[in-house]
Amino acid sequence: MKKALILIGSPRKKGSTAALAAEAERGLKEQGVETTTFFLNDLKIKGCQACYWCKRNDLAACAVRDDMQQIHQLIQECDGLIVASPIYFGGVTAQTKAWLDRMFPYMNMNLVPKLPKTKKVSFIFTQNQPDERLFRSGIESFMFAVGLSGMTVKAHLVGCDLDAGTKPPVTERKELMEQACQLGRDLLA
Image (cartoon, rainbow, N blue to C red):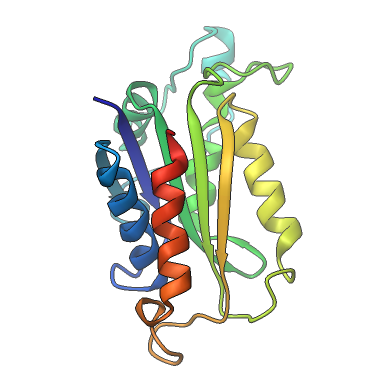
């Protein structure tokens, strides 16, 4: 059975990002994919310590012992990932950025990736602003950095004009919910 890991970088468990990630999970499950979901805000993940232990030992592993050990293990075991984050101040949340920084063991000093291209990754981004292009550079930079690990970037979805509690809920945006579900269906197709 294929496996997918879903990482949600929003602190809101019932917000727009979580709702779209749940739809992507539904799409994965429709394809018979086993899923595991984590809210990064619930985990204890330290920032990268720049100790270079992973480089000196040429390992896709990290010397820092925290909840990232479990995430690293699941990344190695899964066939694909979905990373979902709201956009705060032009980029992903601090929780999501901490996860990205701790992906450092998955490339060598010459940026040669250590994860196979057969491992797929897709992204869900949400933002309050109605213009999808507004934070494009931050989003593209994040996706590029994740791709340095070796994973093949499949797709991304940007949900715009969303703000839990002040704007209509994302669950009322049927086209966006369907796009998220399709993103899940397509991840490992």
